[in-house]
Length: 436
Ligand code: EPU
Image 1 (tube, rainbow, N blue to C red):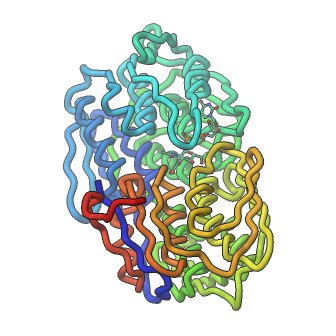
Image 2 (image 1 turned 180 degrees about the vertical axis):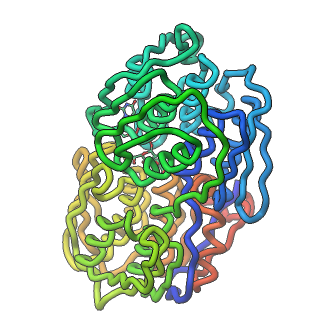
């Protein structure tokens, strides 16, 4: 397993280009199962999760070609299989997004039930409720979810996708994708409004689907008989962009970001401004692919952060924001409303001298003058990103073990950050000195 060794304190200066979005690319790739024609996706990030999705689609009869530019061509040539096996689903929860496309196109699907993960329990009841609303029969067998469309085709219906923690992003992608081939009209109430859903709707529309309202809480889908191939550029990754903007605020940064989806980052922008980090837009001819310049002010001011579904502050930036606020000039309060247990970074940041007090879904962050490098452990993707930022801002050396979590969602993060001045080396864990 790999680890990072970070020498803290280096200022960040230079230009970065934001990659394509992981969380858009996964359901976009799954949408290739809805057609017999090829689907080409451009700007797909090179990540472990994407490689897993390619492997899963291959098992489901999809031929796949990709190149170094991030262009991926997917083409179903054998639609006889319909089993997403535990082996793959356990490595990537997002495998569940093949459920809707497979059910709609092949009339049935068998997907291993995803387990919990480091950030919480993560049930899929809302996905299944949506499939049932479209007329599917849902059963469980040997840890697999079996869904079947009686008569081979789903039927349009009205379905409510709100849960105790708000709408579901992948659940919305699943039901919207399934509804494209259903007989009649589907209305999804309490749909997720995330930009990734809008991107999936764009691809489906270019494949011939008839979708209204993507990006709002009510999505209407008029079913069609078949979908054709398409060529689509993946949305830029708002979470990668947000991570680097926060890095600029934390590490004496002077960073220019291109391909930055600023229009999808307004909540972060607002919080950064209040914390004293300036994000100046240099070019927003396309506000989802803007060029921006981020610099830190005199000091970081404390802010209150509550995560919410889009357009609220994203849960996927909570850990990184917490890392930055450990250095604020006063007390910040962070409340997690999407995944109330998503706080594995709290104990690790505390090892670096952060003063954090957690009660349930809320953490009070009492700013300190400086963080101190320490050996820490990555636990989930975004918690790990928070630790990398903390390591870059700390004095001395930080070692982060288990960085495979980071490789799931950031393309060679150490190279990206090194290119703007960070001092990060990737090493083998066995080459690190033993921790006491
Ligand atoms: N939920 C249910 N039932 C369901 C589905 C979700 O109760 O059937 C709950 C979840 O437990 C959670 C809330 O609803 O409390 C929202 O979960 P959601 O379904 O929206 O999460 P997801 O679609 O599985 C995606 C991203 C996550 C991101 C969340 C929230 C992908 C591949 N994953 O997950 O990204 O945190 O939306 O924005 O798109 C990450 O990239 O690090 C990551 C975890």
